[in-house]
Length: 508
Image (cartoon, rainbow, N blue to C red; front, side, top):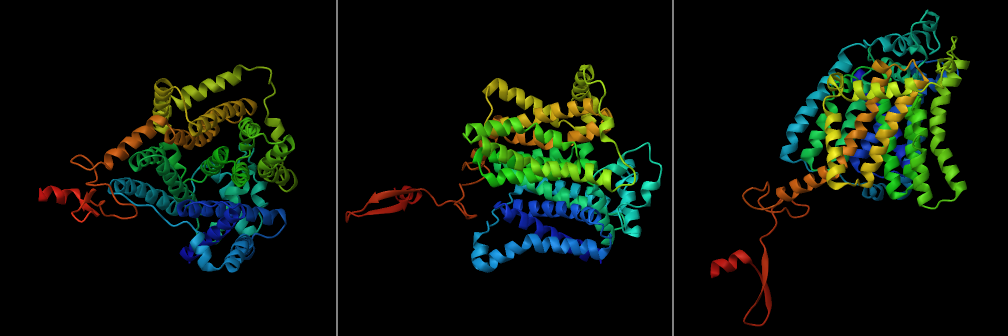
């Protein structure tokens, strides 16, 4: 029964998420489409029990799974109407076809990554939530909600003055409720959907920029980050927040190159989801306004159009902040949480600000502790950044975008730690650093030195001869070697014919 429920939930996510992609006219390759659809569908699902609570509807299996079905119908309906109007055959032809060809040297990467995914999925399914932040907040609230049929339940009658986890986003609570009702006593198996989907998405994105050997190595470096890997099976907010924050920037930076409005507004929706998961993401979203304004001014957009576009881009983030952090806490929960009282009272002293920046660099980005947390990914990034700056003395547009995002995140996390002292370095800021990992990964994917090295590997691979990986260049769309080189020859009758070079040599 739980397996059937899990598959039906996947189907709901797929239909709902694809409907959102269809709404924004986002057309991508199949791997991107499937993984994005699952991620978007899961994000919508995380909002539905919260929405039921806002509407004072009881949290029951009928209401929860009924709302999931309604969401699938609402978002999938336009797709079905389009298919019926266009015809299934024409719709099928309009879809991109899978074109991934697995090469032998990719198999070891797949085996290792598959093993890491297996361990993560098994732990998410078999072991209960154990983190203090989950047990003192979302996990306990979800468990009580199932028996009391409301998110605002008796859990809030417990004296929890030592923690604020009960006031965090309903994102985790809603998903835990869904999967506990589906027959999974520990919930949290939804984390595996996030983990597998973003892994597949990132690998295909890396593979478009780099040779599969380098793409596989970078993906392994990313997945095997010690601290972050633990959160692929341990429920907290930061890993999910990282995924949607990265996806938002991915489409925002795509917009800087294409100028497609649908990518821009879709990026805003993804940023809104990231803000819904962690409210402080709103501040980070505002820090990307200079880049947006610069691109818009270069395109000579009218001021009124710029203001409307920025307003629509930020609207999902403002909603993602207001609904759980202001409306829900102040008007639904029996215990209120004064967020304004957490702000630093001495904003005229900048010494703690610079101290925080120094601590982030010395303790979270470099040093022995940083190696235990992240491995060597930041050191590799620093080396290749310096090499590109010294040797080439320029960065391509994509690399500049990801470097801008890295700087913005560093500045933003330091400022947030200064403004909100309870965002301590060793817990909150450390987990917020998850968001930097995909940023440095995609800077590496756009590092010109790595791109040139990737092109060198591809040329060597396709060079016929003793040392090449291919005996002859492959013909397009076939697995056979290309035909032997030919030469045009004048015959006795005066007509030209084409004969293989090798056969002429034999005749001689």
